[in-house]
Length: 161
Figure 1 (cartoon, rainbow, N blue to C red):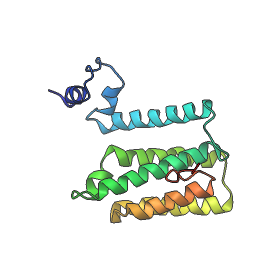
Figure 2: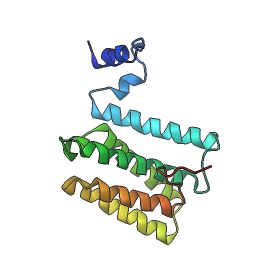
Figure 3: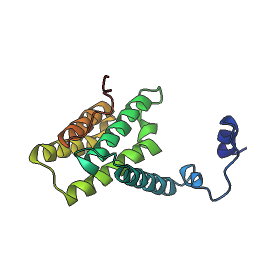
């Protein structure tokens, strides 16, 4: 039984037909999975834009908010006994890299204020260091600084009624 069939059985769902987009998400080929993740992020951003979900910071702030979430998820997985190595080689970190590239395109198209540009450069330095040190907490702090500098909403803070 394939992983796909086991997941479908576990979730009490019928196995998706061949050619279903989830084939790409479960592909053993990292390039296919990466392309699937890139398209998924782009589609999610477009849906947020069309649904009026983007705040004052617009696309850049939305991407920074999601990038911060992705990096914080890496912290949790890197804390497992297997450590940061599998995280750095997995789809979740690929999503961090994809999110970084998407945010880079947004910032190239519309350069941020100097404080946000400084935060962005600090984030990129932390991202470069991650493969040597596996310090996702520093990367998360840098991602949070970028999000704040771009006017994004803290994804971990709930508004109280």
